[in-house]
Image (cartoon, rainbow, N blue to C red; front, side, top):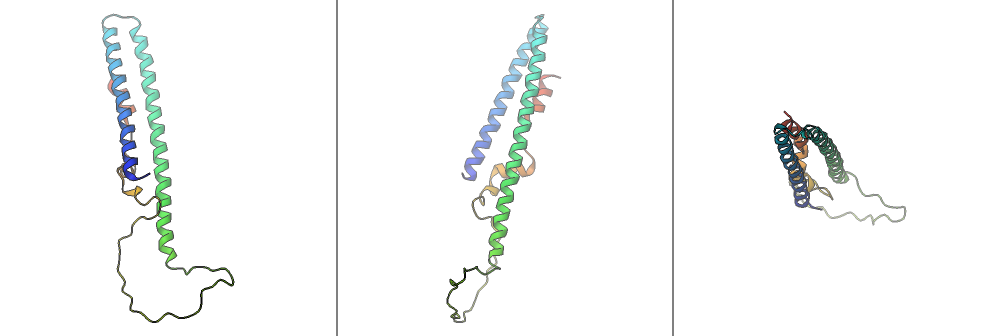
Length: 154
């Protein structure tokens, strides 16, 4: 899975949360209108809807916690891979006894060293540059639940 796919799926999830919020808001508006028109059941239904909105908020919070945990895990792996690739240059390869390479010294060569910017390599290298990863690093996620409850039930 590449960063573009992760970003697209993250955007879809955000869109789904927004759709749920709009649907609940529309139902709340209808129930509030019914309550103001004198429907005795509307107040009870509005209370039920408030509980549903709270459950949605709790679910969104748990989804955010899960996504942050996954992001932290993947970022840790990516950093570990980067550190492993950097430290592997410092250590010569290990060979099993009897399988060492021939001990012929190579001819002297001029070595040109070029400094490069560190890049995340390995399986998760591109992940850290994606929009989802940046959103997680900035603490952004689906915080619609709390705003949904406050906007509906003022």
